[in-house]
Image 1 (cartoon, rainbow, N blue to C red):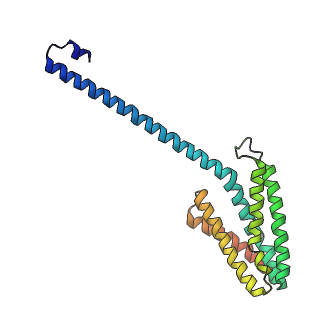
Image 2 (cartoon, rainbow, N blue to C red):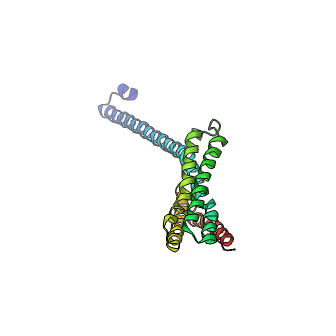
Image 3 (cartoon, rainbow, N blue to C red):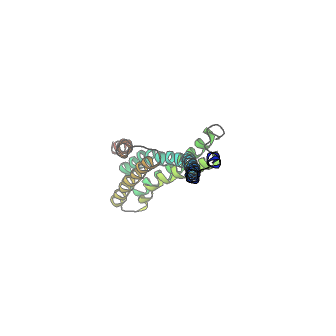
Length: 204
């Protein structure tokens, strides 16, 4: 701009003025692009932090509870079912194991970490999430034994177990970044092992 002001040739002054204007516009566009890029990065960082907090405070304790309730109660429920052949007895064992495990896991989760160091949020909330999911995990395959027909109840309970293990695998893939095939195989192997233990004990 100063060069244009000192030039006595009108065409040169115009050329230099146009160059100065173009440079100013380019600088403005660059500043705008940098601001937009920073905003996108900040938004991505905030989204990552929000997702991480959600996983730590709700998904992780909920998944731990669902896995414990769904898998750990398989052995007592199906051991009772195969040992007695009585739907009512299997239901009583299942309901007591599910509620007991839910209470135990709620206290274990709440008392194991107050959240001040790990940033996992309120221990009461995490305890409730974990306890409720534990109880639901066990109740899912216990409630079918309310059906008086033992064989029908058993078939439905086994179907519910398959659904529960599928849900656990999906949550691990969706939120814990586990490969879908590996997540499914790991959960299926653990569930099959506990189920087989219950069947063997109940049939002996």
